[in-house]
Image (cartoon, rainbow, N blue to C red; front, side, top):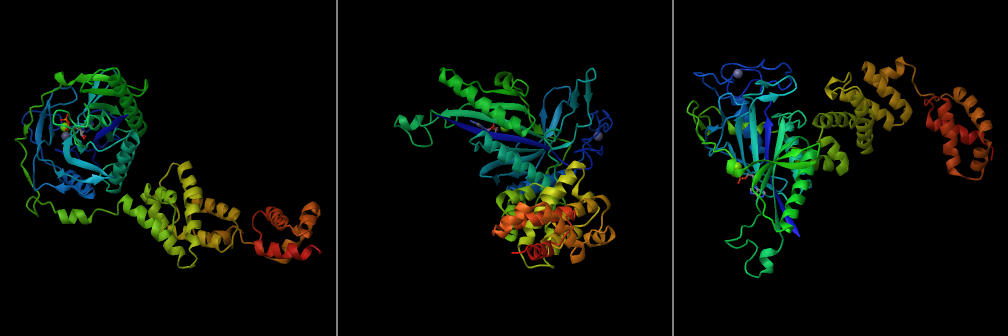
Length: 491
Ligand code: ADP
Ligand code: ZN
Ligand code: MG
């Protein structure tokens, strides 16, 4: 048996208005190449970088949200390498004094979180072109300890980090758009090897390292690719070791189409980055108020995080873990739900109202929102209007069919359900004179159900109510229907 070990390096583009060291717009949606550029992010000689404070604050927030420790002093360093997408021939990054050290997420220890600038993009679609819109965009890098044991754990970690970045507003972290990029370091080690020799304990001998040789996998652009690339790499390494071969420490690239990793460059040829402190930027002092960073204030700005929300929603609203997850991954939906339930609870003490609100929200309303490719913030009605709909459905003043019709009308034109009911003549029909002719009709048409009912079958009554409701286009008062059907069937 082989034991896989994985450590992740995750980059995320931060959602700042401007770039990391200049005033150019940071706009990942910009389609026109080389529009958001200036002498600073193009690396012209004689220009000077200026630190984007907001970017530093985002990294500090992310780090503190993960329980990491902000540095007292931090600095930027030059990482030197030559590549056409790097205008200065060095990247401003952080080497030995990262903004954040330590932290933990889903049982995985965080080594560090630091800040750097993104490189440009080589565009091959139209001839060959370098687009520098992305050059100099603030980029957060988070490095984990080699604590991850499987591809599934790696995906869960990355998804949770993505969610936290979104909660903090630090990054949209969309992998398909390249806003979050993942590198996976993978190694395998034969299990119980040390123990079986009876020589050393769990930590291994001095001569034999505890972990196997790692391979770094790049070009992972989706969560599925995180899973598949790690699975492939584990299998590849195990097969090599089984053949008695050694693992070469190298960087490999994931090929999404072929579903394989391919050697990119070996460690021997790897760059010597010749890191040295960035001479054009001051060292950052993060002790209270020295350089204008207020860590206590930043900490207070950290919102309720996904895991806290899950636990609170399960407790406060008695939702199942699956229901809670639906809301946790869509905080705007969760906010809407909370506002609606709070309003609904002023009408009823019955806790069932939360389930009704949840169901109409996550199935019917969310379906409409998705179909129309809009955001919940764009709705024409308020959570309170929505709560009134849930209350009407809960009190059985409207049937589920009418509730759906109503919701659609609210979705199309906005407004409170009570008003729509009045305006559109959707009121419930309880009037005997309107209901009786319908009942007479369905009793004649469904004589076998009538007979079943006479024999005492409860389901037959339900069926007959359903038939009458259909005739009344969902507007019949279920109580009145039941009462009148029972009255009209002679026993
Ligand atoms: P390097 O100096 O090559 O960049 P680091 O020690 O900085 O290596 O680690 C980079 C990443 O690789 C980290 O996420 C770390 O957890 C992971 N890593 C280190 N050793 C291993 C290993 N043996 N197996 C899997 N991942 C590893
Ligand atoms: Zn610029
Ligand atoms: Mg490293």
